[in-house]
Every structure is written in C-alpha cells, then in structure tokens.
Length: 440
Image (cartoon, rainbow, N blue to C red; front, top):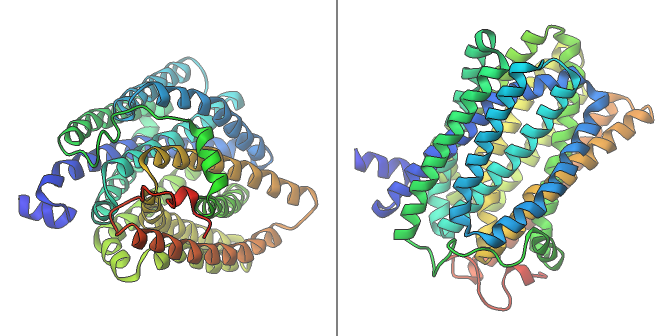
C-alpha cells in the first residue's frame, strides 16, 4: 500500500504523511464550499444581473474591512498555529448561518445578498490561506511533485460537494446543508493540526511558519509596487477575474432565460460543478505532473488564456439553446482548467519569494487584488450595459482581453523560470536581488 501511495503522490517516504493530510484538508475545505456554492449562485440568479455589481462591491468592501483584522492576527500569532483557529471560526460562522436560515427565509433578497457576500469572502480567505501554508511547508522542488496530488484532494472534495447538494437540498433545504459544510470545515481543522505536527518534525528552514509575520498585507502591497514579478502575477489574476466576470454575467443573463424554474437552475449549476471537478480530478491525477515537467510552467500558464480565446469567440457567435450549450461546455472546461492546471501552476510562482512575503504578497494579491478585479470588472460590464452595448459585443470584447492575458502569461512563465534558475531550483533567493526587488 505504501509503495502505491508513494507512486500516486510522487512523495518521498518522509513526505507522505504531509501529502496525505494536505489532501484531506483540501478535500474537506472544498467539499464544504461546494455544498454551498450552488446555493450562493442560485441566490445570485434570484437577485439578477442588475444587482451583481453591488454584490461584488459589497464583497470588496468586506475584504477591506477584514484585511486589517487578518493582518493584526498574523502579526500577533504564529501562522501555522493561527490557521486551525481561523478555520474553526469559519465553522462557527456556518452554524450561525444555520440559525439565521432556520428562523428566516433564504428567498428574501436581504438574506440572499448577505449569503452571497459571505460565501464569496469566506472561500477566498480559506483557499488563499491553505495555499499559503503549502508554499510555507514545501520547497519549489517538493511543490512541483506534490501540488498535483494535493490539488486533486480539493477536486475530489469539489466533486463530493455538489452531489451532497443535489441529494440533500430537497429534503433538508439550505439550513441543513450549511451544517454539513460546518462539519467538513472541522475535518479540515483536524487535518491542519496533523500537518502542523509534521512540519514541526520536518521544518523547511529555520523556524519557518513558527513565527508571527512582520509587516502586514499592506506591506504585501508595498512589495507589489516594488516588484515587476509580483505585478505580473497580480496582472495575471486581474485579467482572469475580468474574464471570469464576463462569463458570470453571461450565465446570469442566459440561464434564467432558458431555465425559468429555480430548482432546475440549481440542478444545472450543481451538475456543472460536478462536471468541472470530475474533469479537473482526471487532469490532476493523470496529466498535470507530467505536463508541467515536460512543457514547463510557461506553457501551462498560457493554456487557459488560449482556451478563453476560443470559448469567448464561440459564445459571441451563438444564441438561444446553442449559446446555453456553449456556455455550459466552455464554463466547465475553463473552470476545470483553472482548478487543475492554472491554479497549481500559479501557486508555485510564490516559491521564489522569502517566507514572509509568500504570505504578505500572496494574500494581498489573492484578497485585495482579486476582489478589486472582480469589483472593477462588474462595474465595467454594468457600464457597458448602461451604454447600450449589446451582450454579444460585450462577450466579443473578451477575445482581445484573452489574447493579452496569454501574452502576459508567456512573459510571467519565463520570468519565473529565470528566478528559479538563479536560486538553483531550491526555492526563494535570500540575496539583495530576490523576487521582491526584481525589475527584470
């Protein structure tokens, strides 16, 4: 059994417990989120396209409020000890949602808007924190071997979540599903505790992850302003956010037109989630590791922008039921590519940074930059709608944006390889020319 697990995980014997507990942690984290995601998206459909920009703005403002709180916590407490407590706090939040839905109505616009905002913020923080811990635990060489298997844990969880929603939303409703999500979050806390124990026995470097941060997420923004490398990562994420928002608005516009029944929409969204994660799991287990070794990070990063060029062009050229079919296929392929290929590859880019900056810069990019992109994109699309720009024209505009995204991905992949070569392939550089000072 151990030999089989070592082949499957591509781990060394001493790394196997960490790989398995990381798998379990990410499995439980994303299973819990995907139990809730179809409910969140259905509430977004109920609220309509005209309110989406306000919802995105509310998510952004929530991030602005929470980032200083998070910064204070990371300066006061050691990060490997902090994460289990934060995940436990998220579980308590879910219990609170259960009580709210028990005595309120999930169909009310206020409840729907609040739930949409909370799930969006919670997921972004939880996933960003998980990958920050992975960057802290593993060197670049370890990450390239293990990240595909660890990401597959999340994909397996994301496959489980929609099935749970499909099975239980009828008999138990939203209030029962949030308790299932809370239980899964507690499982992720238990896995984090075991990971922390492994890290204490196998430190990557002297006291890494055992000291509180110096600086804050705002310091991460300062790092971002000083580094072209970090700016390229931020730009990559901004363009991804813009194109994702284009696609999300298309979904909100098209799905209610073709499927007026709320239950049918929820089933479609849950089915899409399931298909996305089944495809992503297959890629992660069977292809990602081999592809990234043979093609390199540069080609892996360019793949999703290339798919986006074709998908948005096809979506702009169709209408009616055909457009819905294109939306479903393109949405599934694009999201599977993000989870199975682009996201793991993007996470390895942060291994070129010193440990504190892995958290500071990464969390600044994953929270403030990401949500800035979401909010700005939502208002941009709302502005185009207000100017009377046809929906097909809006979608067509995403094609040149995708081409620009591909060009940036190509540059970023090459720069990441250059930084890795300069460090001897062992992780970040500690000299004065490290990635935060990069101007190349």
